[in-house]
Image 1 (tube, rainbow, N blue to C red):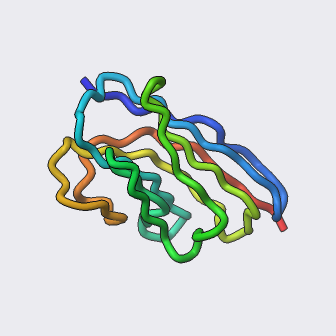
Image 2: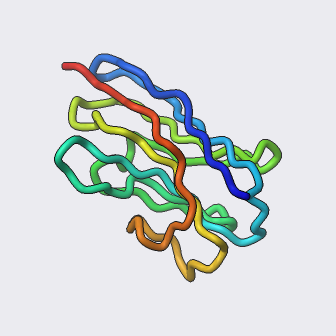
Length: 125
């Protein structure tokens, strides 16, 4: 059984940094795609960044140059380094993973099968 557990959220001032972590247990696919999504109150869930088993990455335009996604395979942990945070980055952030069947990296939520419970990020101006 796959479990994804996020951590690292918090409250920061604009311009600050946070690193989110997602510990994946029971996730043993050799080919995979994992991603970070966020959802602000009253808004739809949106893809922020994704990475596949070849190390390819994809970012939403709104976070390019500020966020970096990475994965430590030895620890089976996904990370999202967030720099130069803005108030509009405030949201609940979710980790997601597929079941090894995605043909390409996607920032759409529907191809992902497994989801964490989320971690809150709040950026004040």
